[in-house]
Amino acid sequence: MTEFIKACIQANEEISSALKDGFDSSWFEKTKVGAGGDVSSKLDLYAEAIFVKHLGAFGQIESEESGIIGKGDEKIIIDPIDGSSNALSLFPFYGTSVAKINAEGILDAAVVCNLANGDIFLKTSTTKVQQGKLFSNTYHAPHTAIGGEIGLFEKAYANPVLVAALDKEKLKFRSPGAIALSLAYAHTVNYVLFMGEFRIYDFAAGLALCEGLEVIVEADYVIVSKDKNIAARIEALIQKL
Image (tube, rainbow, N blue to C red; front, side, top):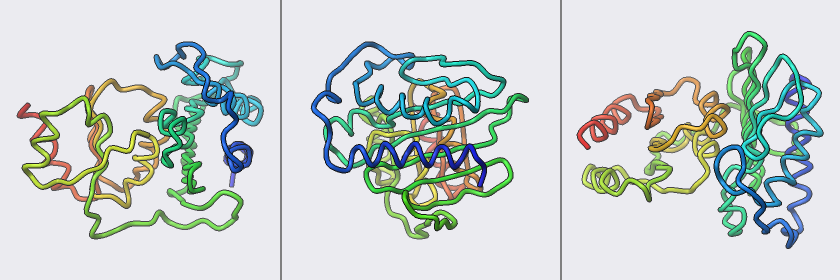
């Protein structure tokens, strides 16, 4: 395990420990529009500060909240809280996303963590995707459900025509509202679908965790599935819109 991955785990464990006894009332306060275009909460900024503390020595950080932080030949892309609205609504599907791009422009590390249940997913350029739990040293290949019955459709609320088309095709889905986390669970669910504006904070780490799956990335949609035929069916539906 690399020193960078260890630092990512330590950052997630520190954030998780802070959350375990409940949210501080100040974390619900909104501040200003962040670099990613959304309004940052004090929870977002709290988590960002922890990541900067643990990861700042490894390179320049590009955060969804504050933009560029520090200097370095390597770039670290973070979403300090993936699924901020979920977290601030105390809905248990929120986490963190970290990707490191080396000086040659190659993504060589990715970490996505579900703070609500402690699941953490790791990937480096020389290792396969691993899944584990915070505060545990045991890792394994990602869980998979061969007969998974649902997909995850991020931003479904903004795409009602496609929602109807998926329903007609009996392609069930849920829309949990945390893109990096949804991609981290792509090995388990039937498919992951996103339609909308492509932001690097949402996808840098999550897509790296989809190794071995069918991945389709276009300017305004992303489809991931362990079943190539399902991915093709969904893309055909999109192209008919």
